[in-house]
Image (cartoon, rainbow, N blue to C red; front, side):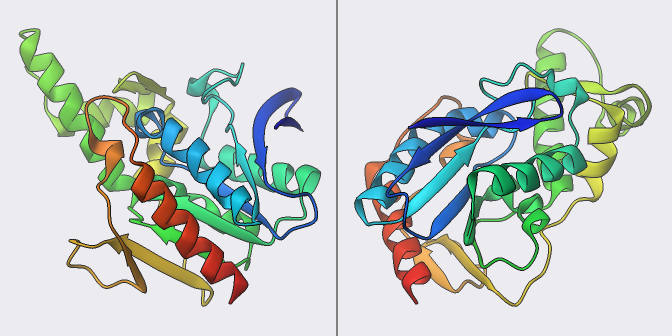
Length: 231
């Protein structure tokens, strides 16, 4: 079901799934162009949670998806403020789930229990987008470097992977890291060598060239979260 929350003078879309009287999970997808590649996955994930009796919210952040706000006015701190507003208007929110870069903003909701899949630091996201920009420049016969691009980005903003990032966004993203908490369930893919509290089968669809969906991965995510929320 479609809902919306009012933030900074604009109505932002929020998809709602599951029963109204159940514990409510706020879902944070990957950020920037990575979010576009997993939109189908996120929607099906929300529907599967609903089938398991878990209510969830999948909000659009200002400047993303159906938002009428320009992305070049957004920042990490603005997105965190938007999440607080969304939770206040459409909650109560009891748990948070984030994928990849979504973990950079999940701390906005305080000490709520958090589920994270493959969290990443903001600087790593920037480097990934910079590599894409440098490769595109090379194909166009332009010689660029990450150092020169970042110098420009910090003062004038930059377009990376189709995203117009403001100087504020670049600076905040470069220093952003997933916040720490004692109530985090860290989940990684089965073949990821890093430590984790749980494992799921699947692959990082957000790194593929085109949007993709993995029904088995969506089901594994939903089942892991349902078990976690029920204790």
